[in-house]
Length: 130
Image (cartoon, rainbow, N blue to C red; front, side):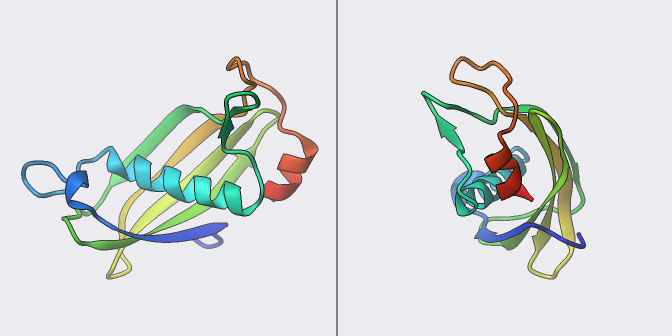
């Protein structure tokens, strides 16, 4: 990934593995979401509030290239691929300790109000994301 907006290191926890000791596949999305939330908080953008809404996912995709086991170190690279009127699309890569892409994918979120209805991304939010 050429120009990530955020990078976040991590380590595969035992509880994130399956009975065979390999990382269970949905945890890739958990790590990508943790990086996304850290980026939003660092930029002063709301992640979720019961009175103000949040950013639920409407689409996710991922390709897996290499497995992880408990204790493996990784880094999430996060980039914004598109900002629409009420949605944001992210690209992510999960890199192993050797610098190899272990997984890559995308997520699309929609900005919603407290009732879950789509709402436009505010100018302040948009400015903070760019």
